Length: 358
Image (tube, rainbow, N blue to C red; front, top):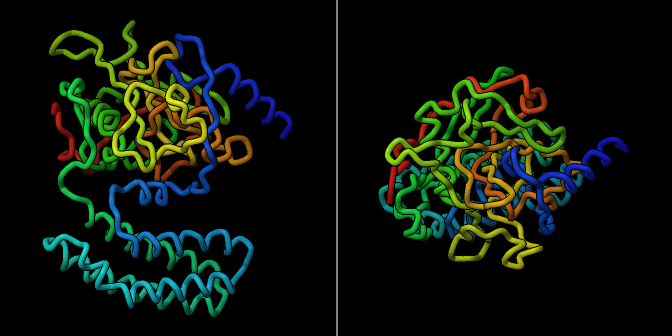
């Protein structure tokens, strides 16, 4: 533990998440974020407002703490409240669903009711493993319901000065094959459209295929995306110049996305982004320490370490853009180093959400 603490101290002083050829910098410390589950983070990041579903989601997520303490009385109350919400507020939930998705929503609500009934039975039996599995299915139903609520019209304004940059107007799922195995990730264009757009655009071009891990910091990051040769990013063949993607971070409760400014620069020292660096395999966009807006192709995987990087209390939130989360295979990240490489990044779905320009 002493070794880990020493390493963290050195890292936070000496390094920022920039490209490897520049000097590091420091940043303010944002508030903590209790969520460490990538699925939960992505659920909360959806641009929707449906209080009954959100309460239901949070009730089920909050049972994790009670499960660790075997507080079955509290779990029973949360489960009963969840049953009440889906039984007595079903109409409010269904009324908020667009008409074209109504039939699918009705089936999902029915499935969710069954899951919650089973969950109550497992609560009465105090069966922790079965409770976790059934809760996972229930939360997946909530995921699908919340996805039906998302408006087809993109909800955030992207400044016109970035009209020539690709953008992902939604989410995409990618399979990342490395020399140590495969991972699956969700890329969130709802909250980081330009960053996600650049990544998906390059993945579809095969840009990352065969590139090495060019930076590996224990308990901190794995970085890749540095092309072979002298270039430090993607050269746009249309104008033969380096394509640059601005720093792009959404702040909870704010209508406009923050572009080109870190939280430190705008005085948000205690804020947590909508997409926080809060779990192993958070994907972040790299930029130099001299210019927040010169990120081009390099990205990194955050090596979340619970003892060293409390969720929401690190030097990355607010000065780098998170744009996705590894949802399967994140354990592979702890095996990767500078002798490894990205073999291929395949876009499984969501490519239709990519727009080459505004």
